[in-house]
Amino acid sequence: MSRSILITALALGLAAPAAAEEVVVFAAASMKTALDQVASDFQEQTGHQVVISYAGSNALAKQIIEGAPADIFVSAAVNWMDEVEKAGLVAEDSRKDMFSNTLVLVAHGDAAPVEIGPDFDLKGLLAGGKLSMALVDAVPAGQYGKASLESLGVWAAVEPSVAQADNVRAALALVATGEAPYGIVYATDAVAEPGVKVVGTFPAESHKPIIYPGALLTGAQDAADKAFYEAITSDAGDAIFASQGFVILN
Image (spheres, rainbow, N blue to C red):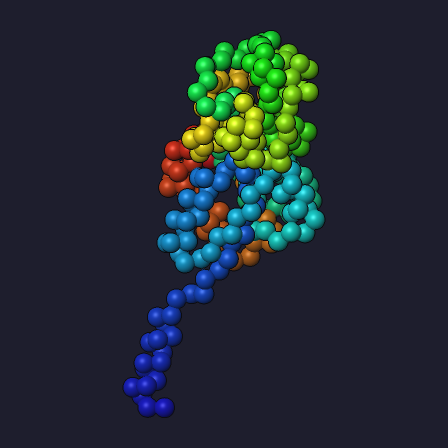
């Protein structure tokens, strides 16, 4: 090989970009709008690919514990991250509380505001219709919602009218399409769906604090995993989440 050809080959080798890597993220369904934007920006800036699986935090935690390959997990509740950590699947010193949220009552179409307080007449408000909620004994949004209704003394009256969905975005969709006149979701979900109107906010003291913990998982091996994990709570990432109504904790 001539000297000039050798120099050209070496130059091309040095100029070649690093191979694109894939980051696999399991995230609470309520994060979709904001996290999709963070992922899109990250992919454009780095060339790496981010694959995100959205579902109820309970389902995602169980899948991770059962061996599903994931690099990052962000839960909408502390207890499901606890389960993953107990299974020894959280990378050391990577767990952190990222965001918080607010629980709201949404309605289909133009509905009047509601004063949410002890013994408010939610059953009368439904007028025979369904109250859409995420799974009340498993999905964080449903668990927070049930706890709030119990605290306010109205759960027993509306329990027979509850239509349960697999995750909070599915519960939101039932209201947006008019299949349920009212639903309980996060404030951030309502921001993402023009087909619903927030008619009331549940008192923060009526349920446990809504905290989104995130963590790198032990299967996260490459630099792209760590880079995207940091991007979620970077200044730019925080700004995106804040624009969707999340409260920044990190």
